[in-house]
Each structure stands twice: as C-alpha cells, then as structure tokens.
Image (cartoon, rainbow, N blue to C red; front, top):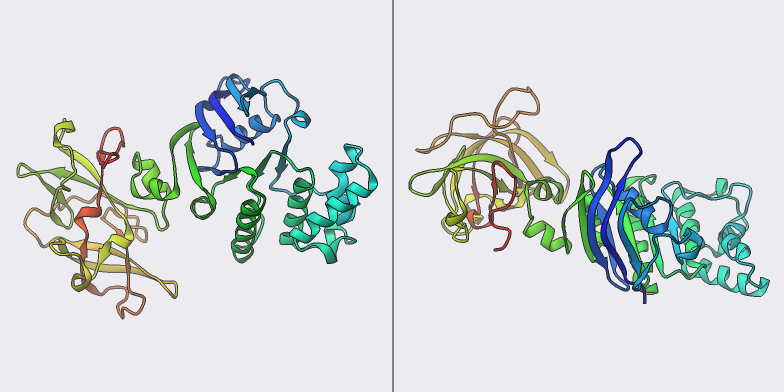
Length: 383
C-alpha cells in the first residue's frame, strides 16, 4: 500500500515568495495522479518536496500514515524520473538500469534478474549493451523508467518526462506509461504542463496556479464542471470561448450574438450584479440543422479556418443582427489586433466554407458556463 497525504504544504523561498501555498490532497494507493498547470505554478517544486529534494516550509507529507518531512530521499522508497532522463553517458543501458541496485549492494544474481525483468517489460532487451548516445529519445525515456522500476518503489514520481520528445513520440510514450502504471499498480504522481497529457493519463488531476490548487477531480469533472474561469480556460483544446455579458431585466443573457435564455440551473439568488462571463466550448456550436431544439442561432463571418483532417475549427466573428445584440467589442481579433469578438467553433470537417464566408451557427444554451465577472468563480459549479 502507498497512500500519500499532502496536508497544508507550503514552500517559501529565501526571497520571501511562495512557490507552493497551503496545498492539501490525498493520492490513493495505486492511483495515477496528475499535477498540471502553467510554467512556474509550483507543480515541480511540490513534486520535489514529496520526494525530498526540497525542504518543506509548512505542512506535512505522510506516506501510509508516517510523516516523511525529515526523511532523506533514499529513505522514502520513491523513484523519480526526470525530464532530462539523467542517464550516465559512460554506462551501458544495463549498467544504468542496474545502478540503484548496485548502490543497494544487492547480490549480482538478483541485480541481473531485476534488470532482465525490467528490460522485458520495457522492450529494452536488444539495447542493454548500448550507450545512451546510441539511443533515441523514446528509448532513453524507457531506460530512465527501467531504472525506476528495478527499485520496486512504493511511489513513482515523474517530472515532465515527455517534454523533450517530438509530438508523435509523446503520444506513443504516454500510452506506454499509462499501460505500465496499470500493469504495475504503483502509486504514481506525474507532473506536466500539457493539459492533454493530464486528461489522457490521470485518474484524478490537480490543477495549480501560482502555487495554489484551483481544482482537483477526474478529467471529466474538470472539463464539465470547472470551478472557475481559469480551470475552464486551461482544460480543453481548443480553449473555451469567453464572452462578457449582461443579464437583462427579462433574465436573458445579452451576448454579442444576441439574447440567450439563462440555463435553468442558474442560481439567480446568488447574483448580486448583472455582469457575468459566459463560457462556450468550441464543440457546443453546431450548424443550425444539427443543433438541439431551441438553440440560439446567429450569423458569423469566418476569419480563419483550421482544418486538421478529422476536425475543422473556424475562427468566426459574430455579425450582430438580432434585437438585443451587444455592439461593444469584447475580445481582440488575432490577425489585426483590433477589438472584436472572435469565437472558435468546431464544425464538420467536410464543410466547404473558408475565410471571408458568412454562415449561420447555433449553440447549445444548456451547455454554457457562467462565471462571476469579478471573482471568476463559476455560478454553476454545483449543477
């Protein structure tokens, strides 16, 4: 068993700035847990505190109920895989994998057995006598994983392990890492800035911003019920569209595309002002004939088309044509830098329209998100 409890953990640097502040969560035994967030949000610092490479300013870390704040890294029974792989260039693959076992002074026969077992799991058998300089990036990553596996740790810690690989290899390696973690059943904490990796790999995900946890949940929970505007904008690709809106006297949302009925779950009793931020994901736009019943329809002009084979994303500018439509520009048009509302919408990939064309679009009003314009908190977080 390997349950990790992070209890109000903080890290303050000598200059006085907080890298991590009051972080609390529990990683369950055997769970694949993701720490995700933008660069500088504190996720790697938190990982280093868990493994013992950084001191803790405040709070407590417990492994299976035992406080480990003061334990040396070698005494925590954790294995870490670094972004740089940290392989010894003068050693062969076999020697790199065996190195932690040699330090532990295991018998030679046991070292050989464990190395061969790890090499078999990671398909490294034919590469055991090569040096790291003779390996591809993906092969080096497997060697780094093998060196962690042979130790038989209670916990795997992975710090941006795929960031040095090209896009195609990243997809392959994240599949292999997920399969390996399921096979071994080892509690794993994985740090990444890539929200796609977080969504694909994680049983649960903790999204950090400026050293503080914004939300913890399954990928589906973060995607469908984001706690605030930051979570909503970070999770999902392309990102959610955000529009400032007013709530009219008739409780209709006044959007650049025209009026829209408020979702039935909107808590009017919690509203102390009439300004909100509306979030709409690209996939919740439709061609009018394919939209859910009673979906609001509006006209738009295409300013950019991104065809990705299976998907077509259009950058469109609404053309105000409905009573109640807001004329005021709310966003920045990416090409000209001039003010203007620009939406990213997903449409069928065989749609034969392009830049400069006008079209009709609809959006599913039941799927919109509403955020407090002042705090960024979701009004619908509990729906």
